[in-house]
Length: 102
Image 1: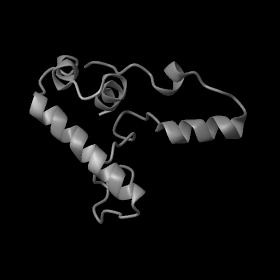
Image 2: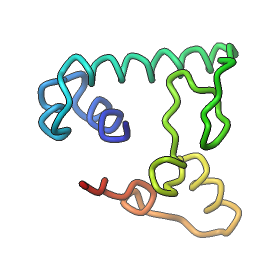
Image 3: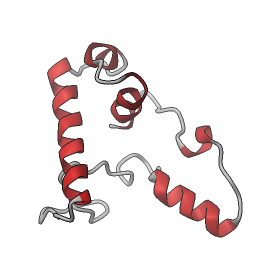
Image 4: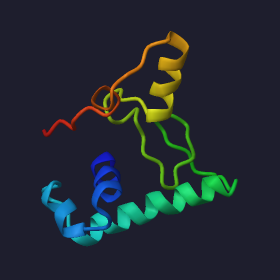
């Protein structure tokens, strides 16, 4: 999910380029996942919350990117809040480590 979000932010919706970095996924599966994430984000911004919850972290599920499932990675908002509280600043590479390929 983070690869999809990062590449769409950097290059726009170039689905075939994104799929090249995600072996085993099709153009339509990547596009559908991005659309689901965006729909959830827009609904949350509008104040509409899903009744379905993530089993790992309890967040509303629609369009949710679960950082608990990503082996303990923290969402950028949590990392920046922790840095604010601790008084340290993290670089972009520290906040968004490169994804590990299995």
